[in-house]
Length: 602
Image (cartoon, rainbow, N blue to C red; front, top):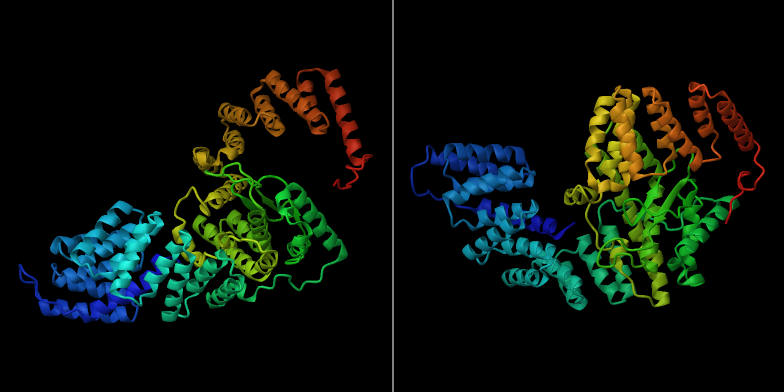
């Protein structure tokens, strides 16, 4: 849970308390239609608020405003309820009206600034919060929200100043302590962070985040025992945290063959990512854990190490499909500035591998969710939320692994550690995290929204709904965030256009795909088919010649070319290609090399 969400708990309590205790005085100006009735409606709304019945509270506040259109506090209060139920536009409209009626209403400015902070309108938020503080220098909520906003925009000195101001007004406020501790952790002032969190825990001893972040501070100081104790406390306080029941080694009985597979995959991973082997046999506890995971320790599903680079991120997992085993990939280098292309170190590589192996513990759930997307049984938002929920569970398991396996080993080896690599500073629920991840170009929308689009395309193509499939594909072609997929997108566009009888447009799409990926033999074959449909056999033959050049051992290339030769009445060439195809097929059915017999090469 983020500080803003933690602060909102105390803020909500403070707002309700202030509304309950508010003595509504007659306002200057025109007399309201029924002032007593308006106040009675307002009081009813407060009663509903105390019972957390927002729908009835909204109705009662609206009634109070109908009876007295200049009832400033009713607008402020209704705006706050709209904010709580996520109707931010309506909340801003109510705060605007309240400020029109009373330009000195600090609470309206504070609340509107809070909404602007949620919508990413930082400049407006800071302006409103500054005005709220000018009007009421003792409005602690304004300092809390502005402190959070400063911390989110890396203005840590200003954030610390606001939290300190809040503590000057209310020394025991645990959320101001927590917010300031986050800033101190970010600036490396770990002793100060621990002091603040000690005080916060004294006031609120059941908040998981307080222990978790204090554990982070201890671990940066290499106080391993204190750090582990705090992480364990946080895990067990955190609602529905799967880390509470996590057993690192598992209890499943594994066969000798499965364990040998696990050892082979570990060996390959360490060979491909040598930084992971930095500590050699001293890191045996990590290797032993990985062996069991690769051996199917979670779901009796063998997992492979995949040396290919991840497609969309620093690490990824691929669920079993189309006859291939589940696998993980880990990028050896940083992808972004300022460390782009630098090698990732031991701990970072291992944390990524551990996380992805935990993800594959939910492989069947991932497959089921993808199947639901293909069937059209979930929306894009539900699909992304479902993926995030599963990866959130894997993150919780990774954090528990860190506390129970990695940290005891790091203590023994006297190694520094970075808790953020293991989700030790991430205590949001999956729902809270999804609300925060609102940038469609970033995780989890990238790549999972795109995966949903592909499932939709495949379903519509299967159902012969080629026009809507084409519409979606054209939208996908315009999304430059997925440059690595553009060749594939244009192939699908081409096939949709072929189905719609748009052969010329299909050829154009095939050609664009080959421009992006010039050695894709399948696209040469498919473009040859399109040329054949048009009767342009020479162009079809050119493409099939290129297919043969790229894959001289593929019998299908010769079969396809033989068909064109037959149409051109080149019987001798057609027979030669058919004979070659027969020879290659026979070789496939009766392999003589070790590789074709299925022997694995180390």
